[in-house]
Image (cartoon, one colour):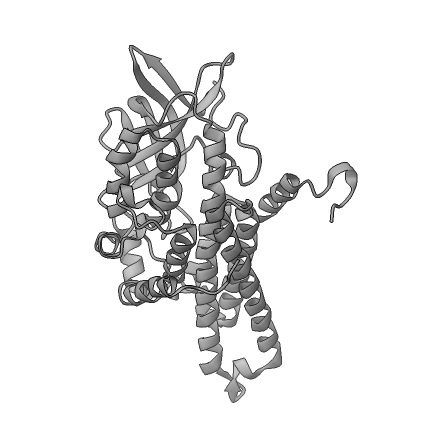
Amino acid sequence: MDARLTAEQEEIRRTLREVLVKRCGPDDLRAAARSPEGHDRALWETVAQQLGLPGLALPERYGGIGCSVTELALACEESGRALAPTPLFATAALAAPLILSLGGEAQRAALLPRLASGELTAALAVPGAGLATALALVGDNRGDWAGDGRAGGVQARRADGVWRLYGQAAQVLDGHSAGLLVVAAHTGGFARSRTLLFLVRADAAGMVRARQTALDATRPQARIELRDVRAELLGDEGADVPAALAATGDAAAAVLAVEAVGAADRALERTVEHVRTREQFGRAIGSFQAVKHRLADVYVGVRAARSAAYYAAWAAGTGAERVGGLALAQALEALRTAASEGIQLHGGIGFTWEHDAHLSFKRAAGDELLFGPVHRLRAHAADTARLFDAGEVRV
């Protein structure tokens, strides 16, 4: 792996940072979070139509740019620095890869160009609160997370050649505003039970969508209720859906890890700026050795997390190995530490709603609730690598 960024990658970072600095100030973030969509529609049109971010990792034949997961991750790093509320992650890192992987040629040709241009946004809906399980980040995803025929999941039934969905999905990222839902549902009963993915349009009869109150307002979530909703099967019935979800989950975890590193880096920068100007006992508090040591620890953690996240993004793009979950654990821990130390070192103002410090902390906590927790991400990575087989540590 060559850790140096190419000129094209540097240009992606520079251009996007210039846009987000102008469009994602504190007041802009709060206004976007309070809007019905939960994001700035004008900003989304800019990053999607003018910069082409949703299509970065999609093939050119489907309207994409043809880059790799690394370029998408770099774009999300800048989005994470600004805590920009956009449907980029839900559309480009979760839904679009599944359509590309499992969809038939007609489905790809009809949907992917619209996703690449930003004309259409999409979201992945899984039953209950099982997103991390469905993506195989905290355990095996070949179990009963999709319902397994029991109440509480999402069930799919086929009658007269038409698929219909019943059930509920919670914690669906950008699910209230997405134009297309990729819904995981259980079908086949107990004898031939399996999980399949279905496409549901935003205007489908019988579907009820409601935005939920989330810890992180910049990462809006929705509850989806499906009441005899007509759906279109994604791909064919013989598709290995758990394998596709696991591959998508690893790449998405790598992208999310790089995004978390961006947020952690900005939280650290904000704290360093504050301790350089805040004076106590006649001198800047940043000159005290204890403060220097605390920030040095944060800096080392962020740098280590960036290295792990970049490697995971590169590995996901080449198929070398799946380390997205492990990188995500390190990145979320770095973000939580950077945000916590930032709140503490900002003193009294760090605990107020008016200051930005709490936004980074909520992003860390919210992402860990959705895709973690950290100890389960690491435990599953250890189990996958078989580090503790027969009670012995493998080296």
